[in-house]
Image 1 (cartoon, rainbow, N blue to C red):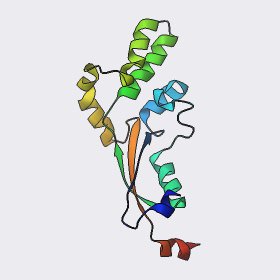
Image 2 (cartoon, rainbow, N blue to C red):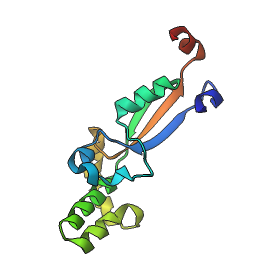
Image 3 (cartoon, rainbow, N blue to C red):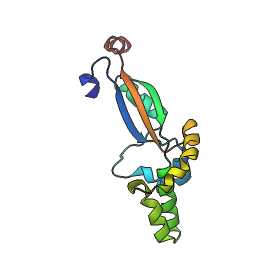
Amino acid sequence: KLREWAKPDAWLVLSVPNAASLEFRLFKQRWYALQLPTHLYHFTPQSMGQLLEACGWKLEKVYHQRILSNLIASMGYVLRDKGFGKFGQKLIDVPEGSAWWPYLLYPLAWIFSLFGQTGRMTVWARPVNNSTIEASS
């Protein structure tokens, strides 16, 4: 529906968890960004590109956000499950809170983002020309 409504020079910008990240591989079902049932589907940059293409969009850019709050909260789930309930819960609350100390990890988050390994990505897409879609059908 969005593709139908979009003007030819429109941009579609989506921010979603990055299921191709190191965080996901490390924490699996304890990954904070799973956020079930908020996120029913999880995407990698490749699967997001395929989905967008199937819907008439061309993926132009993937920006890997420079944050590690999902990593911190995921570690909280692990610690809570291992018996460190209070400390684990403090880490789980980091993404929703206003703590300043996660900003100390920004240099590490910047490096992770260079390799596409942060837990959140923002994708930028443009509409594909309608004549191109009709020709390929």
